Image (cartoon, rainbow, N blue to C red; front, side):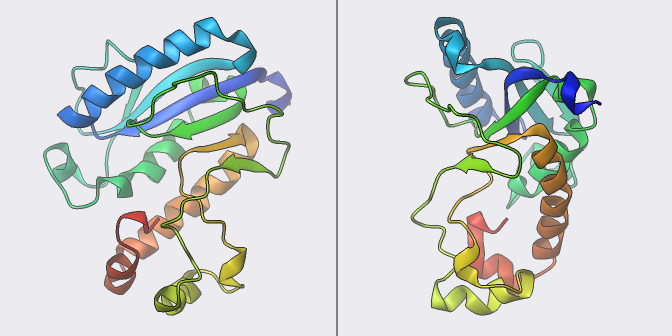
Length: 204
């Protein structure tokens, strides 16, 4: 099968709209990723891709391994209120490329991350599981958010992990199952002014 053809290892992927600030961050991130991957092969960091959601190539296309996808919000090439809304769609399209399918695990991170030490990610998540980070400011059980959460999740809000979409480490097959749902959820929230106001920058 296709899944069994994937090699053991982690494909690190970061998303960006190519603005100058994120590109500066990406240069720093990619440099210390390369240093960490070379110095610590046991970390299983095998590949790095920047998924660019932008209408045209930018100056990093030949500096950092990149694949570009058309954004839902072309204005974000210059400035827009919430460029993150393009992230899930770009990642879903990236999942259809041969390059995305090379390794068993995907680690989604953001441009402002740095590898300050060899990441201890072992044992890698088994099928149906993920490794992520609990954020203190993402609290689905906040009383003022409960009515909004109920629109999108019919179960107990306490079941929703206090994590974002990065950092997250998952098997490729699991990420491929979750990503279309993420795209759908993002689109629904972007059409819901109340949800956008209540959930703010961490809404999707």
